[in-house]
View 1 (cartoon, one colour):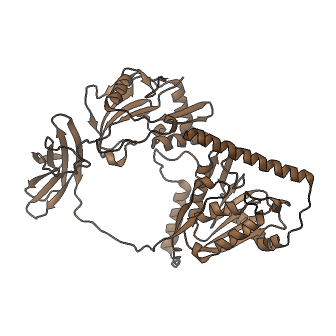
View 2 (cartoon, one colour):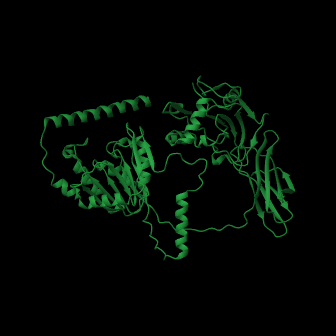
View 3 (tube, helix red, strand yellow):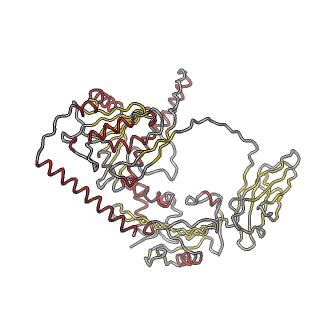
Length: 528
């Protein structure tokens, strides 16, 4: 059985384009014994209001489909045909809404047991953090942090005539001022029927009030007898009722502006990896390396500040209701290679000094995909690998061997136009490598999978090393003892032909060819 978690109907002004429907109408994913589904459907005004009225009567369905959804008994708020304007916009409202008018349907009884179980498990158990984050990424707010919206429906009606609404002072004098109230009319909107009101608030009570109609530009001016500190505004229409209401707020009479000169970023054009050419090329803008600020001399006051900062970091700060439930030092990936690559690239983009890839099976494609994510000039790229004994026999679709591809990539990265620092890829000869690590300056992440397998069909986990000093020292020593890749490749032993290895190699190539063929046919079927 399907249960309602949240439903919203958003009315769009005529000038707003209709958003496209997602593929297959929405998204769905399994998390344990639960399956979360999110859909978005574009409807005409009449159909959308009919669906909302049906929801009010307890007949919840997936829009455009005859799929019934079980929901609690819903009651309208307000209980008459009208809207409310909240002082603060709701968490699911985009910025262009401003302060939208709302009518909502709130549960009049306890939520269904499966919904309560889902909410309680996600709030109290970090193991459900992935499901909570998945839901937040699709509906753009943390639904399970807002119990007043869970299991509810809402009708969102942004201002259909003005894009914004507010007040400003257009004539500043010591004895009297002129206030201008209004906003920018939407394309093709007729604002002559609107009424605007502004009143000054002193000591929590209205002092004077002015009301009038806007001009063709959506503006109304009102004179004040003295300097104004706090005002409130209201916009209403004889047909639509109240469209906007601004709570009392102070005017800002002075503004301080500072500027910072930012060096122009240079574009680095990155070709797609050979194993996934359909991904497409991308452009990374490389910024100048940040200047290192000199450490000021230690004083008793500065030592006290450091002690207070350390205490605050240990104790933690108050987290907002929408704080991420996934611990920041752990990230789990499964069946989403694109998300995995993007997340790792975001980590690498923070590098200021150097990046070290520790992966026995690192290849030229991995360097192409991840090392180019650095966004600062002069970042050193280092790799510590331990290829299989017969790795040099493996070839790509073009017929090039593993080592030749790596050598060409190293030479290409050393071009000054790439804006990299030192490019140093080494092969471990003494201490063998098993685990995979990603070191970004002084931060180290541990990975169970190789970088070319992360986020595939198996569960992949990356964990932030809490105390990286000892591990960083071990990696540095192993890297110093390792042999440069150029030397290892030139002195590699001759490959010994083996029928068993050759058959296995050809079978692996055949399996990859069938996999690519199946993926291409699947994409063709979807396009058709």
